[in-house]
Length: 129
Image (tube, rainbow, N blue to C red; front, side):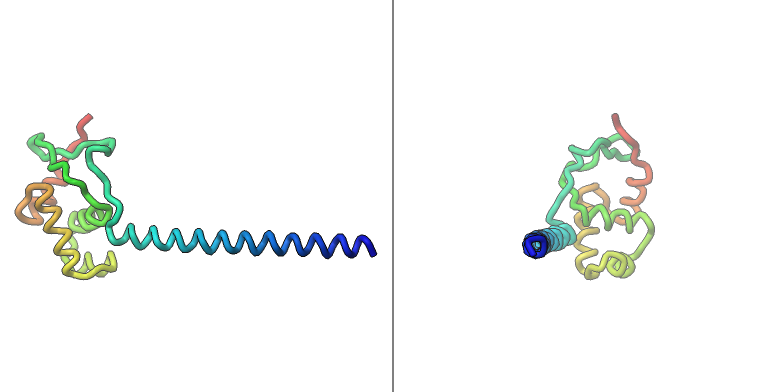
């Protein structure tokens, strides 16, 4: 009988631990979801000055050191792939106007007037040590 009582007590303790772990997991999921949403909105940014490489144009001039958001980096990669705004919008799950906004920011930050110049700048970049 005592063994049965001990087993029941152990089961109760295990259930409590499982509930506590489930609650912690729910909190972590909620936190992760919030961070993911913020990331997708461009809340986290990458300062090019802190990157292990420095971007330079083909003639060796440094790229404007304005902060480039993670989303802008995704848009820049898509522009380099030759995608048009509509395709970038579909690929990244954002609106066309948002894509245009990011492209405009990239053009300004890299000192380019057109996408072709931006692509050319990026293809002629070199790693500066």
